Length: 264
Image (cartoon, rainbow, N blue to C red; front, side, top):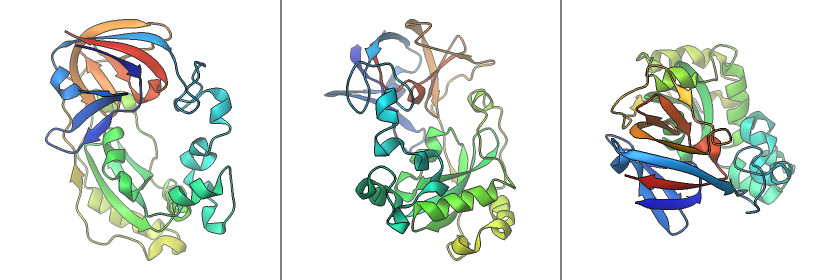
């Protein structure tokens, strides 16, 4: 089976295990069906996810000029506390920013390699947790806009981490934690503006990833340095493909790369 197209982050469906899909124009590949098979990846060219031009990818699948111009790459994406749509104040495109920022957001705890705090739109639960490779997660607050979620995350970051150790996540060097107890402890640090939105009674969500074999020590595949790679797929976790020789490939980290795939 052969496929070709521009890489975008894998689409997922919650299940036991989680189902993963690569979507191309007019075609798709269910990667769970590729487990234990040989998969080759060949870099062909760049294609910016916004303008579609063949330009080197700068960040998030966009060329440099698009990254600094389009509303989908504004600073508030990575730093939600910078959101201003609730003030009717534009960053790059107020209509778009209102659409995204002025909707329910979740501040959560997720355990991928360690417990971390994060923010996502409510509509992205549990997709966001799956993308981070979290095997367990829980909501802390549900607020009506991105700004309130952002200032809550900033306040909680003084008491718990906000980063994932992707190497630990991929080697499955993780422990189960009592996220309910952590949530309850963190309540004391939620800003007053968001305290009324605290979620008092909820349970952890658990994710099961399709992994046959975890790597002992990860080697990251860089298509710029290694434009062709072939290996036996042994697992999928987060947005990573895991191969038998300990190679891992970050699909989301290579958005905007046009590749050829062959399954044998």
